[in-house]
Image (cartoon, rainbow, N blue to C red; front, side):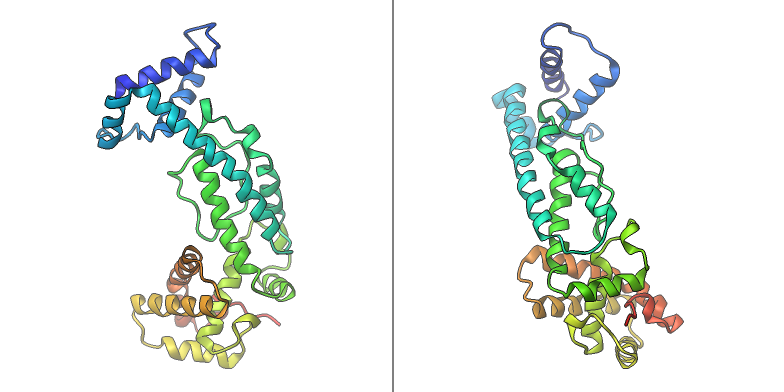
Length: 281
């Protein structure tokens, strides 16, 4: 595997320098090597390479495997433009400088992305946080596409609610929420889950005093795993109410709800569920 990688790297160096040199700065060599590893699916820290990849290299040769892998990365880069457009068209009219700047930074991503030489890099500034962050193990276009797919789920969920209500809820989180690096989806989704637990209208996103009391009563004496399960069941009910049929979207909302369990447990001890399910008027 190491020998195959050196073969690929030697060709990459020749292409990068356009045949004018067989040497280049160490920094660029590291970038080309990291890119080749990413493209071919090689983990340089794993002493046991993927058996299927080893067989492919033995059967076809490293350069053929690399070229096919580059083509895959190029297809993913083309898909980035489609995802970015869908996200922009589906972004709700809620203030967020971080979201606006992130989408602007991702504009024209395929034109700046270099699959042939630096496929592991992300030539963009992604500042807007997701409710469910993309694993740092992903690199390059794989990271960007996973980010946009998750952002698309969040935006489509937010579109189910009245924009004015979302704004008022978010202002209750912080009066200048649009200037903060704040995820817009999480407070709205949490309140939607809270509405189900309180027996309130999900689309209202608003809980009254009796609603908070019903949530506390429903959770009374629940063990941590039971809390998480009840929250996940409430998330399923939210998705059913909003006619969210996409499996990935339902799983996304359910995962967020389950992660609220430690906060809910603390809030119950402090008798202040408003810290989880935002009170607003």
